[in-house]
Length: 176
Image 1 (cartoon, one colour):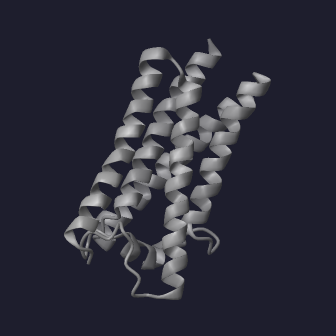
Image 2: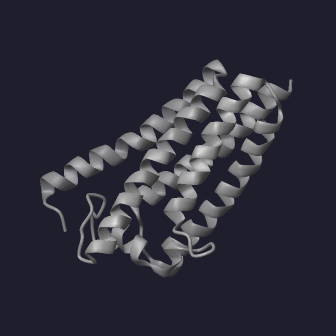
């Protein structure tokens, strides 16, 4: 695995992601800025997914590749990406689906901001419900069946749960 200094850098970087997401939840809860918080959390999800896509690309070239998010044998991004469950829908990689998901979420926030139409908010909420259900399924698959904890995947699950809460608050704020 990685050296102690590399592990320390990775752990501090990974710890920053949930803190930023929690700050966005706090921002939305205190100030009602659900649109800003949704956009930031969707971009965090997209960036984390881009990193996982890069790890996936590196794995395609070398099955022995160790990513910075590989902290132990069972706490590993690469082990999760090597699993057959890394491609669940139409043989598309989950990372590809995730990137599209986060970009559509971000686009819905922008579309509502520009047009003030309610449809993008409704789509945002429905997508966040689907994302949360997918997270629950993938979380169960990862932890119970595969017995692998992917640190970035856990962060993305937190992002998806946060998107559900934020989109619900946003839809309530916009509706009234």
